[in-house]
Structure formats: C-alpha cells, structure tokens
Image (cartoon, rainbow, N blue to C red; front, side, top):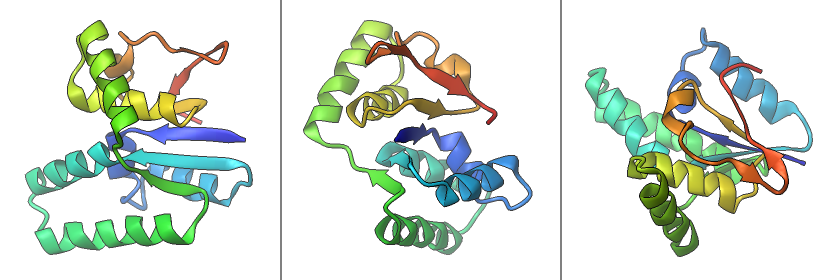
Length: 144
C-alpha cells in the first residue's frame, strides 16, 4: 500500500479544478491501495493562504466541510491529527534540522504514518531533513 503525505501547497491547488493537483488528488483517490494524509497544520496554513487571497470565511468553511466529508466518507483520505507522538517527532526534527514548525509537523506526520511520498511543490522546504525511512529514500515530488 502506498501512503502519501500532502503538503499545504498541494491542498490549496487541489481546490482549483484547472490545476494539475486537483486532477492528481482526484485520480489518486480512485486508485486502490493509495492513502492520502493531510496534516492538520496544513489546514491552518490553508486558512491563512485563502485569507490572504481575500476569500471569505464562509468560502473557506465550505472547503473545510468538503475535506471533512471526504475524510469521513473515504478510507483513502485522512486528516492526520497532531497527536503527542507526532508532536514529539516534530520537535526533534525542528531542533535537529532547523526547520519551521509547520514543515517539522508535516515531516513528522510523514514518518508517523509510514508514508512513501511527500507530495509538495516546495522541495527546498524539506531538503534539510534526512529522509531515510524503512530502508528507502523518500521521493519528494511535485509531479506524478
């Protein structure tokens, strides 16, 4: 089974039907054996980005409802809540690699859920982290 951790930028672009990431998420959800994890910190960043784009809180809540419904109705899409184990891993990663807390939480979610891929457009944000995991190197990619 393939586990994919999704960064905020992919989540944001997945709301735009003309984006390749909208199609990527939709296609991935139709494939058997693939699970998508969205760290809760990405939801907070999502709100910040959409407020900067002058979206209304009502519009943003509509997206949240879609994500929540998708998460509860679909075994392949999970909003990965920040638990004490992920928080501990994130703190260690932030300290060791001098990365921001959001990227540390996203990285920790990747490790905690034993993901195979971190889907992001911002490879540079995660380039400091050592991605050796279960004997494999992480595939960070912005394209399928």
